[in-house]
Image (tube, rainbow over all chains, first blue to last red; front, side, top):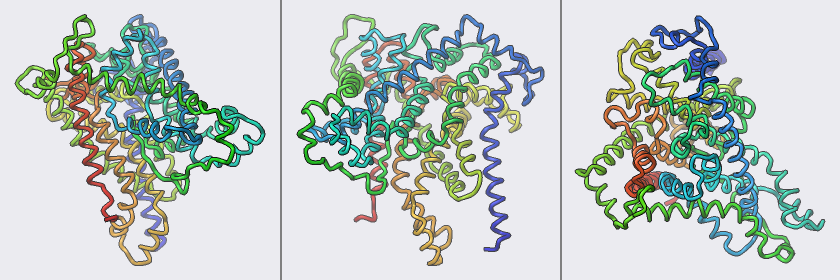
Length: 278
Length: 312
């Protein structure tokens, strides 16, 4: 292949990839643009990519509307996603460490049962977990969206894979220094596992922030909703105000987009190497 | 959530060799203490609900009624009778789930694989493209659903405007299926693409180089080196995509609300409405076990179809 045809092919590749990328992002650009339109602008039959007139009224209205306490929803989502991700780390990390690095009776059996549940379709948990959460009097409160999903086997499986790769020498050295198991775990294994822990935190946070089905059924009163569940309430409205909805969608997207921009590599590497699917 | 096991170098199988004396120093209950917090959650929200869900499906179970009579397999029998009210609804919903899965899965395998092949090279900007294609997936279905309901609106939507059409994407069959599948492809293509891309990068370069030395054409190299090398990743992606498509909920809830006439109300949508809005939890649990049986059969078929034929 000559140098010329190779350069041409490369340019063509870039062209194809760039056109797809532009098409891919344009819906998001239009969402942002519409959030700065007037009610009439958002309902216009002529597409407006640059809002004219440009206004922040939609944000002002949705932030001040008593029917849609969006700041409360935002705060609820933040507490839920952070709490959930923290709970996943706190419970999965020691369990994964024990399953990877300690020898004890029943280890293989416990791991087999935990992994087997990865193959249980989550739909069978929906109704009974609602009943259990109801027994715990958690319906319509944040623990319902923080706790049950932390029982998933993914975190344990993901961290165990990582702990298996740690070299044993450091632990042995710590043991010779008189550390007990818990000290070895917290001072040797956990610091080494930081990349895996950060990735798991991010993935758990994103999944919980975006979760939709469970919160719309388990959270009921307007002040206890998470952001996606709150936006979901607009679904039944007769006259959808797209200016308000797009402003709400932008607000719901900001934290995950920010996280994505900062930690894009961790998120993508974590997902592509471990295959998490929502 | 599902997981891909990918042996990484020598570590996958490595059992840590316990150094002499470790077992002696560790108290016998220490490992169980490490496991206890997770296993408590696991028992209450994973093991218990599996059994409890089946138990519920054997009862006429309404959360608001004190009497929950045992009815044996009656809930199942009613669902398998398509002339009953619940049975009719359920199989309409299963049909919706089936149609959506049938059309979305092939597209969500072929298009991400193509995208991954395009990105599988060393050139500047590759990570940028990867980040852009993946970006929609980090948005939740609530955002994606409303955004596309706006873009697909029959009167003011961009899609009709630019295509010069007058189609009711959110209420007419078959356009609703194109809308639901199209939105889902846009939303999750990047996810499968990055998994395929990681798989492509794990195929040793030497294999490609050896095939090139042998004078194999690009297509031949794709068939003989790339596809076999991607097999484990493909099994995972196909399986995970079938499960995700069969669990499609938010797109239908937000874009079509089941229109027209509940024909896009998917099985999980019907299960949630039956159990958690109408509180007919016995019927809803029975539905979820039937759906789960279908999903597990689909997984078994996928694993069977992709069995390692070279190892016979």
